[in-house]
Length: 569
Image (cartoon, rainbow, N blue to C red; front, side):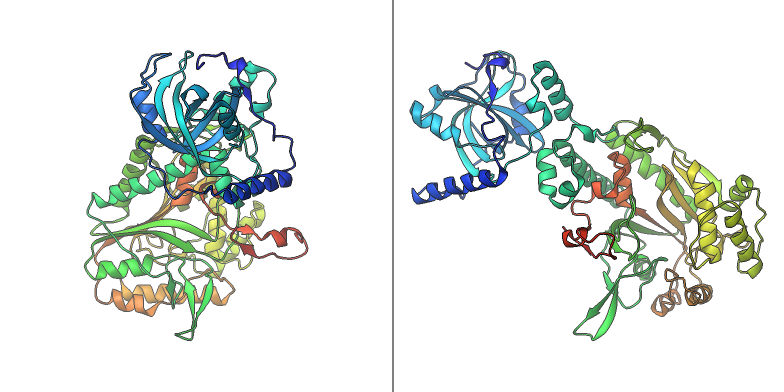
């Protein structure tokens, strides 16, 4: 029986053309009937002896047509395909842990009579979670299978699931080709192909992520890759003596980064609090206290725009290392990222759709050492500008305003010198940074928390790493002179008074901590979401966030009439 030709199996699609509401009503009626008959459609327990991936590894070496009938196994998972050769023989595709195995239910191996067997299997639908007891074997065509002796529905799926287009193909060869494309295992570093997804609608995929994970197995691998990235990051730092810590998400002062904060209210304390934009200042206080190597992986919140690479809530890793400087951090960053890419992909080179899914993927090479370019020198060389040395002067600001106008570089108000420089760097430098590139030695006016450069007046010992034209991390030798830090905060206050809501505010508790002595220290922050985007060939940051913020569905109906609120799906 197991060796019947594939054309003798037919997809059981009697419900495919049914109205989804009617389908739901039918399933609810069936459950009500089972409950009335004393049958519990939601059993409390099913003992699993082996997972689907373990089953595949253990019995994949069986020969075609071989049956290990003396071995009893019990597996569980979700039915994603149902086919029938007759009323006495059913074939299922069972998915669990991103792996698939065929289930063959033959009436000859069942403890039911033929009519009961046929009725029972007619009630099993795509999407149902089931448990199977049986023995391993291979069909005559060589497909590893579980030959089921008993099957139990553990949790019925009440809704009709979308079926991949390949399931409806009238051409068997084309259907098989589509199936191979759909089920071929994706790995980090390879290009993804969303055209093969059974569920393509982005709104549905992001709002009902469980359907996305269920119907598009590749998405499970994306989030498993994210977990591997975090695991590698932690292991890398732990092995070098770093201590993972947790610092407050709510604070009195929104310090540590140039960003607009979210504001909330603490009823008991009767005061406004800010959701953190960065853990930087709290982490450096810990270094003052003697924790020489600390890091934190956590959520940051910045009340700013949403685009393909920015979300108001994002994950970042920041670490601080006493008795080091930004040169040490560049070496560590190269070692961390090149090692991570090699570990996850098997190579230093990876594919990424940097020019959009409609174009061929580009190759990004993480082979160390990474390219390094001087910010001011390279900007002047590429733009043919001669930027005034005193960047705090009105002359410098006017010069940069004129430069932006000349090159059609848009900079919204307030046009502070730091913002103007940032826009020009984005226009002239970042566009050249496809392979990993350090942009180094930023002007002091752009870096209020970085230590002044030891040999380049007006510059700081800071770098940003860009990959695929996007910032991936920011790092510097930390400013540890409390008086200079207070002066930098005062200059930021002037920027804030001119209308820059992202300028930093004075945090006197941090300056007081510096008075006790912060050793020479290097610190770095890296965006985990963007790193995951690179390693999973994702061009939209929402692809790597399990539950991305979405506009409320009520607001979608009034889109264009006003500014809608953001809401979690």
